[in-house]
Image (cartoon, rainbow, N blue to C red; front, side, top):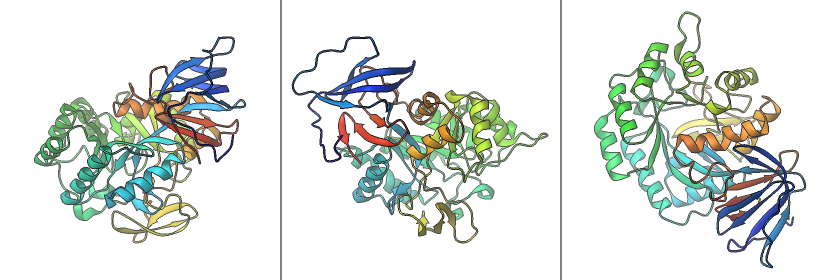
Length: 398
């Protein structure tokens, strides 16, 4: 296909000769029809497709893969910008970059910061959502902090760590209803349990992260409604045979969905394999945790105002060398899960698209290839190289 080709959203688009990844399995030598921003037909080999009219654009996948667009629910930035910048230019730049790497929906993820700065992000994301978002869609906000454990802060700014404040949450949900999709906190903190209950009452996913919670403390939080763990293995109390810790609870409690940064730096490949084997594909979400440095190569950067640097693709804080997010993209996380960790294409797609859609409650709209759903679609070649992206049926070429 021509890289200069521009497809009209109003025209039908049929992708043929494709391996189509659906919730039920992989359709070999299938075809998929897009019309007016939605998937209107998925046909397998031996089935008769609806006749095409003269306006239909046909794309030959040549045996490549057709997948649902990736959904990144934990991403801070890219191409020199972070969501904490809270500007339209920043949001356009970040969503365009990650769209070019296969992400079709994402959460604007904050860092531990002042109440004023967090509210500035929420205000600007809400305003941005009211526009016609041209690239990856911002489905809401992921508040990473500020109620975390200072001993497990990682690359978060300790200056702004506070105990959970119900009055803040009430202000936020009243001012921006439905905007906050996930909030990360340390469940062992004073006041965390009623805060978790309030999150759940407002339809917000309560996530454990940057935490030294014991196994029992995590289980108490799960009973209150906690259902998610951010960047599993990283910035959490690890597994010990006499104190299973946060990690022990995440690995063994099926009520917890586990994120993982599958980049080969944050977690050893055996850790990724262990997580997938223990939780199953239904219990894992691939994320990037990408910062402003993503897409720019090595150099000096910042994360939430903290000086950082990237060397050989790995981001660290300057003061203590702690890992500071990543430069990962979703297409590379997907490929790592398949090529290094041994996931099947179907399972990797579930972890990169279907599961995150369910976590944030948009699975009826996107996250899987099904008739009637929004046409957020990726075309990959047989070697898993990204060839084309559609968002709401509109072609976005690399």
